Image 1: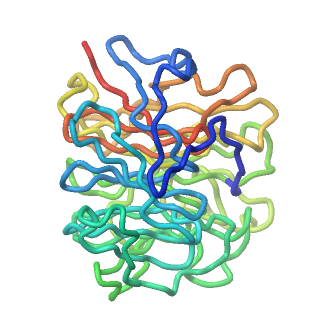
Image 2 (image 1 turned 60 degrees about the vertical axis):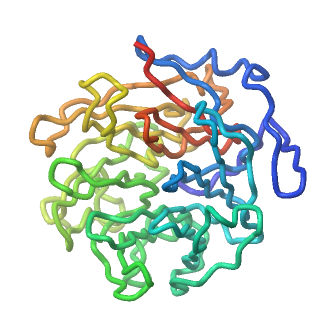
Length: 372
C-alpha cells in the first residue's frame, strides 16, 4: 500500500533526549481491544512518534524505528513490562523504519542506506555517530520503508518495494528481498516479484523465510488479497507485477502470462488489509496452541469503500510448519465502525514470552500478555 500519513492523538513531552511517559490509565482506548480469553493488553510505551519496526537488545532494551526522522530506545530496567522512558538516540534520518540488533550493535535502515550504531546500550543518550554499512539502496519513497532482520544464516535481509502501484521494475532491485553480510558486502537478491513486504520472519521448524506482501490497489474492494508467502529457498518469483494473490492477473502486465510460472501464496489474507510486520511465536507464555504460529499486524486499508484490517491476525500452520490451515482475528478494536484510532505495524516477542505491538498512528507500543 502507498505511504499513508496519520495524525497522532498524543503530543510528545520532550525533555532533552528523553520523553516522559504518561500513565497508561490516561487512554481508555485499550478497553476497546478484544483478545481471546486469558489475554491482556497494556501500554509498554506511549509518545513514541511514528513507531514502526521494533527490536530488542541483549539487555532487554527495545529499539524503535519510525516513519519520521528519529530512532528511539525504550529501556525497561526494572522488568515491570513498561518502559522507564523514551530515549531519542538518533534524529535527522530519512524514514528510519528498520531496526535490528547484532553483537551489541543497532542496525538502522533508512530509505536509501543502512547504518550501524556500535555498542548502542552504552551510548543511548549520547547520540552516537553511526557507521554506514550500505548506501546503495534506491532513494524513491513509494514503498520505501525498509524492514530489516538478521536471518539464520547471519545475513542482514533488506527488501526493496516497487516504486509504484503496479509497474514493470525499472531496475532489477525493485520488487525484491535481498541479503548482505553484516558489514554490507555480498549484496544479493534472494526473492523476486515481491510488490511490498514490510514484514518477514523465519520458521522455527525448518528455517524457511515467510513474508507478508501487499497487493496492488485500484482493482476493487475485494481484490486482490494481501499475501502470506513462504520462500523455501532463494531464487523464487512471487508474481509481481504480473499476478497478485497467486491468481489475479494485472490488467496490463498479466496479459499472456501464466500464473503457474510464479510461486503462489502460502495463504491469502484480507483484501487491502496492509499486512506488515509478522512474527512466529516461539515463546512459552502463551498457550501451546499458539506455539510456532504466525501473528500478523494489519495496518489497515485505504483503498476500500469499507475499511478493513486495523487488527492482529493469526495464521495457523500444520504440524509440518509448511502449510497454512487457517486465518483468523486475534486482536481487534483499533477500528471502531469506520474510525480508526490506531494502526498496528510490527510485532516483537520479549524474553518473557509477551508480545509487543507498535502503532504509528497512536504513537505507542503495546504489550500483549497471557494471564490465564
